[in-house]
Length: 615
Image (cartoon, rainbow, N blue to C red; front, side, top):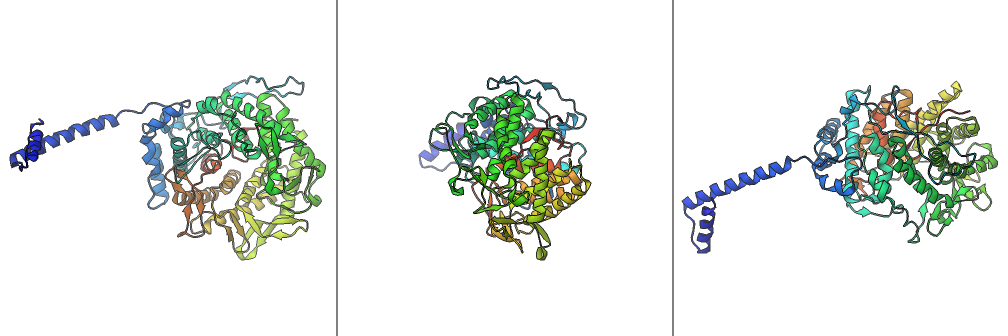
């Protein structure tokens, strides 16, 4: 068969032109070779990829990523509902392409399975075994039972529109995780534009991986369990002289491990959570956790840029995670250390009985700052107020925690009286910040404040005062409209980080992939059942797909107030996977999926199981 080819080469070597007969034979020879090669390639492509389980290692995963990559990274030429829904179907309809769908039910397949704690679920529980770190004190808590792994069933009772939206959001999670898993598995972050591995952003603890664990579980894509069990390493912390942020590591890493345990029932997650919790305990002194901590040297301090003062959000956003850690271990030490700050809060009281607190805390005197400070429900103060409500809800609304609900109610009254303002030119309500001393208002609102509508809506579900329920829900709806307008008023459809009133004047034009607005939309939809909030969330998601999507994930968008100048930064925060995409998914899912009466979300969107009602 190859004789014409050899003859052709000989003629060329002698400087002679091949005859027409030789050329014809050569053509037939090349055609045969092409057919044989094509058959070989097709046979290779028809081989099913190696099945992956939730315990597959990184080495197992990487060789099999290619099959599903094209489905989730193809560019969107004209982003509309149909285009996104088609992408979602492409990304989720092929169970043999890539590791995402091997052994993992699609949303439609899950319809025959049990939902995650829907109303009529029967969940098999397994008791936990106390770890060696537990005390034998008579005041020790009984560890709560772990619930076995679940098969997500988020689309019970939802229509085709919601189902297609959920598929698209799930496809976005696949794309974001794929970029991380392929290029930065085990690192803190991946560069969404460059694909660079960013090993140490928060201490080299695989923060994106751990932060995303429960989102993967909720979307039916559980993975990376073995890495957490055997490769997650804390022993290097502090040896390079660097501190870790106790606040960030608690809400992202500790919260992620505890939530993964709650959703999976896998004791490997609990064991690593206990290990991390024990490492953080020495950061506690004088009734508070210091924000900057060197695990190796056992040194602790506050941030220098605050004048070495504590921050209200830092000090008041550990209690939920530490109570959960005590409840799953039976060891009260974690909750006791976290709750010590609540003793200070009750002792000191709010600023001039407003129900609100300065954002700065004087460490040496153990008092809140009365000078050179401010009051805000945004950055530096936000999650303290969120946790007043959520810690009370999580712990079963116990009478011993009634002071938390009282503090929350007083704070909302203070928000309405001192911070809520109306911009008539914009027909918009917003929350100002005020300086201390002087109580002078600044017409400024940052995106972080947009968690407030959701907090207010959540609070109404357990409020026993009908008049207060109406008032709080009305305020939630007004602020929700403003937060959505942060997005809808921009040519990109994405929100700036800070605006000034009147005019929604852009003071910081970055969209940092923040979750607060869609978080509140999820709560407002679940409380009111108004589909308008789902539609608003969908518009935001489409803008993210259009402007923030990159080859290796999603990046923060700069210059959102200019369609021509907008571009993507090489930064994908772990909270985009942990919070933003999770809340988008839950917004479009059935309210009975991860229900609000059975789960409380920490400030990083990690769901913890609510404790039984207590006295």
